[in-house]
Amino acid sequence: MKRLLFSYVIIITVVALIGLGGAYFQSYLERTAAELTMELAKVKDRVEEGEWGESKEAFLSFNKKWERVRNKWAMFTDHFEIDNIEMKLVRSREFIEAKDGVNAAVELSEAIMLLEHIPERERLTLQNIF
Image 1: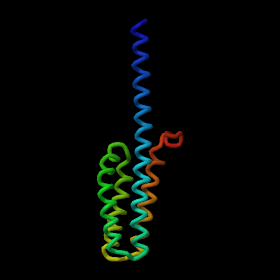
Image 2: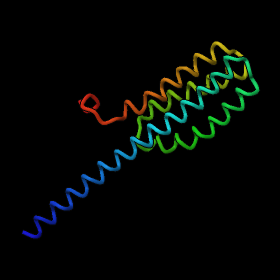
Image 3: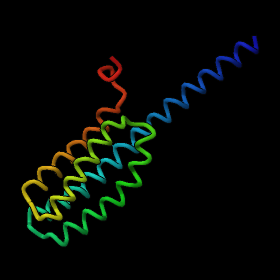
Image 4: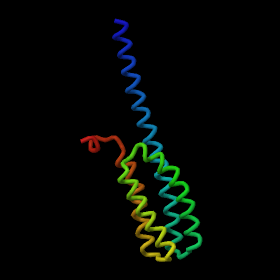
């Protein structure tokens, strides 16, 4: 009887740890996505205002944060989504370098949308399960 009770305690503990870990990761994902989205929106604002020096600086600042977060996200999220963001960022950087405000703003908007989409996609819901 004690052995059976011990097994139940172990199973409940493991399930609780998985649930808590998932909740923590979801919180981290939402928090970092919001921070990155705000940073990228600042870059987009600078691009739309035609402030190319400031937009390059803001993009470099964003890119440093993205590099740290990307490595952590890669452990838990779909690499296809991260690759899509990477492509948008590379294109954005090139358009900023070329001082092409329209195309840079489009690519930045798409990158922002992808960043906002990842927490929704990774959230545990019935729709995501089935």
